[in-house]
Image (cartoon, rainbow, N blue to C red):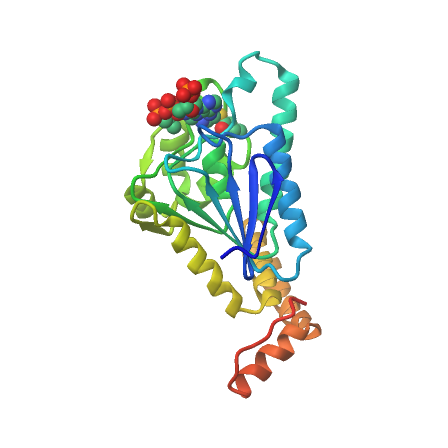
Length: 265
Ligand SMILES: C/C=C/C(=O)SCCNC(=O)CCNC(=O)[C@H](O)C(C)(C)COP(=O)(O)OP(=O)(O)OC[C@H]1O[C@@H](n2cnc3c(N)ncnc32)[C@H](O)[C@@H]1OP(=O)(O)O
């Protein structure tokens, strides 16, 4: 059961279970993004990064129908460029904070994940979707474009061809197709994404948080830098782990045939 339950903002609920933080996008009816919810997400993730007891997070949507339908389109009805600039800035800051979360982030896609609602899942490390969930980046249908990392993250994950089908042709995918193309890593029955995501997030607690953070940095940097610059960094971070208590603890625990007690540092 939850160890704590604080509302960091009316639209992003934070609870914790052991070493896992649970973030619920809660903005009925479609869990859409507003400036306030995006700022709340950024602040919540930044706060979690400072909490040494948190190793993983699960992100899900309130209710049964929507993970998130993306930006609240009411905000763009006035054609205001200032609003567009402000929203793209807060989208970028929030999802960048999520990408840079020190631990492992798992999206439990419990329904529609559309536009910025799919982009937030793309900013997570792992995606688990329910069989009835549908995913799309339909921004072009409403005269917009995915400005929260979607054009890059989707193409990176599924390749340019499928990214173009989804973004340029507006193709909406069901969970089984999303699994087939590598957009998500697992499909589960309706109502089971949260439990599956929590189970995976709990597995992270068996891993050294210091190792996880270093490995995530390497994998993410590898997207943007040539292997020739990442391989020296891989060796550097391997050696740097020997400055952490977690390294000592991990090897000692193995040799002493006991469970490791990580300190996250
Ligand atoms: C950088 C980021 C940019 C963006 O994210 S742009 C936004 C991209 N997202 C979209 O374009 C998705 C828009 N929504 C839809 O296409 C549909 O929804 C669905 C296909 C996901 C589901 O359709 P159905 O089952 O018919 O539900 P419903 O009646 O459309 O939605 C329930 C209520 O939710 C509101 N709603 C849904 N999405 C949004 C949204 N993105 N912004 C504002 N409101 C939204 C609706 O209007 C409605 O409300 P009411 O019950 O009052 O009629």
